[in-house]
Image (cartoon, rainbow, N blue to C red; front, top):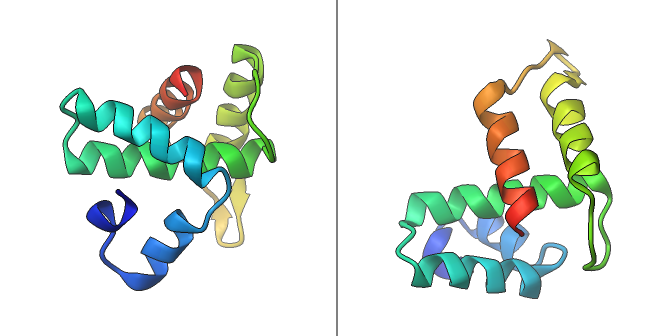
Length: 102
């Protein structure tokens, strides 16, 4: 599935070899079977990787909605090397949406 979503070799490798790849693949397959288009599946996987990174996830398990929301806020309002970076309300919504359903 990852090779159908990502064409650039480095991007494909990051997604294919990234943490919790089997779990992410299952979630993507679930959404693909329900008609999600390629761009949506790519977005979902990008947010799953962001969730894993932001929350420091190593294994599967339950995560509270409060923890997901706190991680979303932390990511949205984190400063970057180039000054304040704000992903915005849409990114926050996607982060929470994917995190709750995954």
